Length: 337
Length: 281
Image 1 (cartoon, chains in turn brown, purple):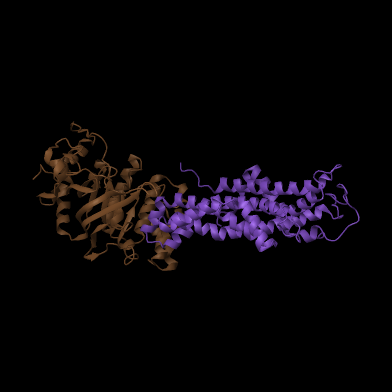
Image 2 (tube, rainbow over the protein chains, first blue to last red; image 1 turned 90 degrees about the vertical axis):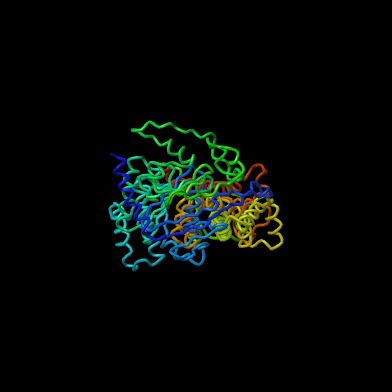
């Protein structure tokens, strides 16, 4: 019953996705960090994000999953302009916004906003929450000076908080409330795209559900497009239209959410999905051995081969390309397609 | 400023802080109202080396001058020296520390190395040399002390800035398009006031010690009364080793130097306890 309902819902959603235009196109985005352990030590290159290519469609929710170290957060920071890419382009509605730091310093925040992981760390403890939301309004002159307070109160109401909370400090709020404040602050600039970087991971499960519902409500009210980053597949599945699986900075698989769960083409996707607890089906867990390899010296060939249970010789030698196996379904594996 | 009252109430909660605050107040009031409390000691008096009495609370020195008056006017000098030194240290140290903490990279490394170099310099000998070269007016002494005090303030500021700038709300501010100036001088500065204030009180304390040291070595301003100058005169005239010992001559300035240092330290610790961010539940 559950599957039928969900898949029906997903088909309509998927149609909407196909119809709409890409709002963001990410083209071969690559980010390396050069690090030195000692002052005169050898430079080492961290391959954080490598050749990432995808499109984000208007009004969709794109989920991104992967272990820590898979480059999800770096990707988010590249798109918001917090980091500059080593290579590649980010196109926003046809306009190149790569290296946005200068030319678009003023525009990007109004287009793409971000909600961070830790609601305790993402609010300045010395600034009243109302002022925290008012600051971007004032700096970007979103509303008239006299109307700032009214606008902040409207935003507080929008995320389900009382307008009287304007004059309180962050430490007076719970994690869930703080995350609502952070969301209100991000929405102050009326962005079209909201990137949620592990936005519910730090919250209790019951609060997670509330915040996820808030995200869904806001999406409908404000016609937002989401990139939803998480490591909890069940959460990402709940909210996403499409899901992108990342490993060591590369896209391993990208597909509509239902299809990804039903087909599980990539071995890494299979392992991730098998780790999701399921009451109805008893599934075999695929336990991956070891940790994600260091991004300083990523494995040759397929980056996943060191932990893959389907590994053969070709995996060590040849780097698989991302292949389209079905409309909108891409997989990076030698044995698929 | 919104929480001034509650801040003050918090300050009053710790007894030791109250003691420190009262001590600082006493010294500040003594310094400001010195002319109303005692006449500026000068010339000669007739009553030489009198022990403490109702006429001369702290006794008199070998010129017959009232030591209480000397100590009161000394407070004024000490305050002046430490305030100027702190001002110099703030003007150099806080921006240096904040920039080197926020801008990791070449600029940060250069400032950081500079702080390290200054911290390893042998301060007292250098102060002596510089004071001897540029002449020992009280302002010179204060500026010299300030110049050697900024590295510790810069180090503290830098460490605090490093810690704060790693936090997510700084990244969030960047993401919201908040200008760098606002990020540094609002978001970060608001969060590092505690360590800076504490370090300032420490500099206030050590500046007085340095001034006393320089004066004692004869590099202070001989035309101004300071606690170091009193001590120096006591020492030169054998008051420390003579028998019978005119103990009041060296005892009172020493007490006030100690009192000053302890008061500022207690106040600093108290401020630190209050201003440190509340631990997250």
